[in-house]
Image (tube, rainbow, N blue to C red; front, side):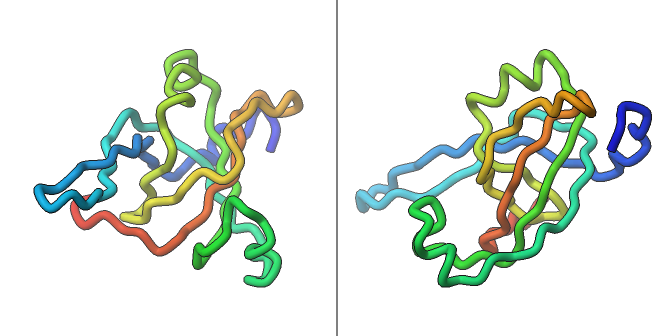
Length: 124
């Protein structure tokens, strides 16, 4: 992708911040809070086999349904969000960030890698 291919950003994503809520019984439940939206390009990446992902401590114990490369325009406000958001919402799927977004010096786009662990949000 080069600087002129802004037309490739066709997917709408929502940035999500993870919060934990403790129930009256003392159990913790994961909750996701919206913290921004953007247009992005999402491309599937070849999935590594499960045995390799088990040796990667970040992925240990997770069942991965898909891995995607995500690219979006650089934005000053979005850069400030990077410290907070831990996932993206795309087509009702919660995609967890595996490799943080960084600027590609050739394209000037922010690029990162996300994984689909099968989590979904009903109300999008």
